[in-house]
Amino acid sequence: MALSEQYLEEDIHPIDIVEHIAEHHDWDFDRIAEDQIAMAVEGQWRTYSITLAWSPYDETLRLICTFDMEPPAERMPALYESLNSVNDQCWAGAFTYWQEAKLMVYRYGLVLAGGNVASADQIDTMINCAVMSAERYYPAFQLVVWGNRAPKDALQVAIAEAYGRA
Image (tube, rainbow, N blue to C red; front, side):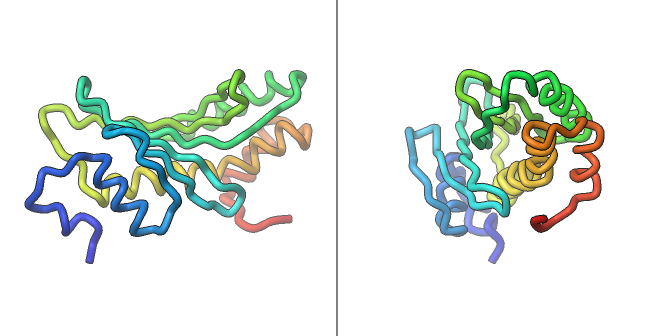
């Protein structure tokens, strides 16, 4: 049964749907508040912290996917150059680096203005796209920060969508 089939005739809070998805995938999660949930999703490279929050004010379901990254100060310009190049390739969502928290962040907002309701399949796709994007670009960010590679060269790894570990 598709994730969305259970919600066809009901008007369900988006975070309730996210909670159901987390249970379905057996992800660790914590319902922080009525309008917010945090979970841990295991990827190939890392475990990603994902938070989804519903804002009834602007009718937006916000997703934030983070992972730790502590680049040395001298590699920050190269990391920012990489972020610009990566974001040119991302059509849904964008990466940023939160210096104070030392977190790489992928953000996406699903606008549901006019009383629209997100389906479980849409939300599941949002989460999967966040993890796939983080997985795709994580090796390139690591090569730039710790391998002292030029951003253009490091991004070839992401463009080729290489999988596995060296």
